[in-house]
Image 1 (cartoon, rainbow, N blue to C red):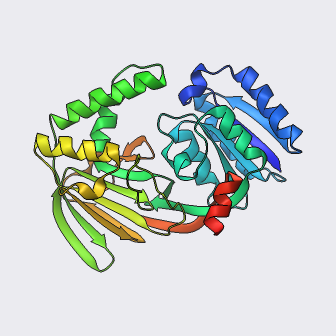
Image 2: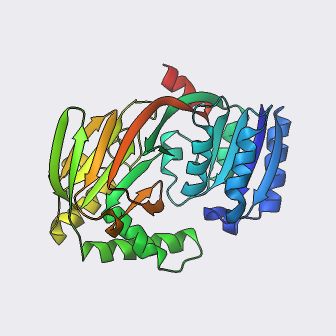
Image 3: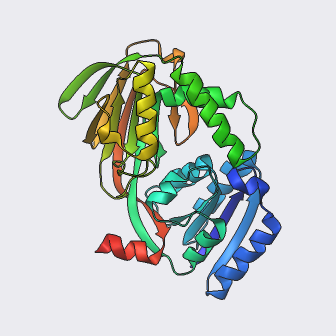
Length: 306
């Protein structure tokens, strides 16, 4: 296969990786298996242009993207509906989409998995037309990211610490939002402290990622907890992957959902695949089954086919 690799030198664990050494290892590993690779290491401010170039190039089979959640989401958006496949080099904090695809969580192991990987078609979702691979969320998650962006950290461990501090600040000052959810034919009006709409339902008993990345549905998680003890239990259940154990979380699934905010939207933000974005008064979220091709370890592709 012909790879176009784009590594974000400012993204996730790549910031502290010897990228000259790793780039040489990537070329040797892929070329030894009969593949070709055109590799570009770029800064965060240049990642969008580099991904645009890789996605539009003729004669490329796979776009290999390395970086944090934002880099992977941006690459997937550019490959949605195209014949090129996305190979994910997981350099983020949690790498939840990559986990759902069965991609090894170390850079070297992920690279080795590309050697004999297979292409699989998985789902991608959109929020008012903007693609995402993992989650659209409002409420507590967005407030956590806002708090975290005001903190300084320079490593993966530092980001985890900052996230914990931001979570505690959010727990101590929760804010409920009145929303209308249109799910299929049903219309639900509720006060919520958090809504997450996910690209397929999360699995149980592990970190929040989808067990079936080609399930063809959105997972819709509505949290109504407002008291501190209930919110603490919510965070504990999320960490253990025990969503269905929490009486303050309503879970739905659908191919399309509309989220309408009953307050000035300018007061709030949303998070899409880890990135803080402007929240519209009304957001239509859809699943696009099989619209993204990804390179996965061969054993995972065989398991999905079975």
